[in-house]
Image (cartoon, rainbow, N blue to C red; front, side, top):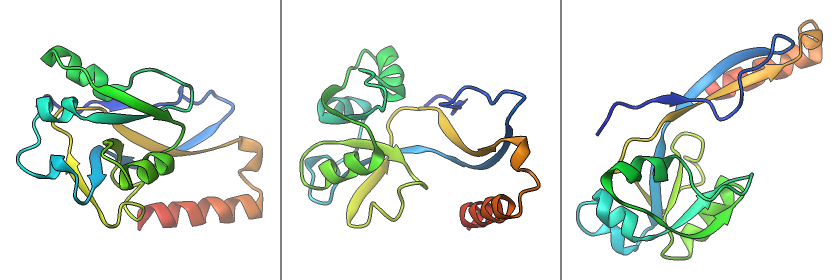
Length: 154
């Protein structure tokens, strides 16, 4: 597998915003507990041959996994597109569909499901906290930012 690239799914914050990186996450594959993909090695070809859930809030027809499969001459069969990771998890839990989700972000939602490293290299994501500078000194906002940092550090 190629080295993992880092990518941000949001344009860099402008000078009018403050930003603090909270954590990095990597994408993993996810299927229900008794899914056929759980038997044997999960190769790029076996993975691509399944029916997939694409997560796109903007209605895109491909994602980073598709980009990673392309040089191998492989293409996923996107059966459904949803707008959130929780929707993808709910569908994968009750079907033969395969989801690709951030590992850390979804750890509590994946209980009872089988997760696996993707057989291709996709960029990791960075989750950041953004706020406007006028909120720097606001006590309630500072408290909230501190709570978010503590939760994300755990």
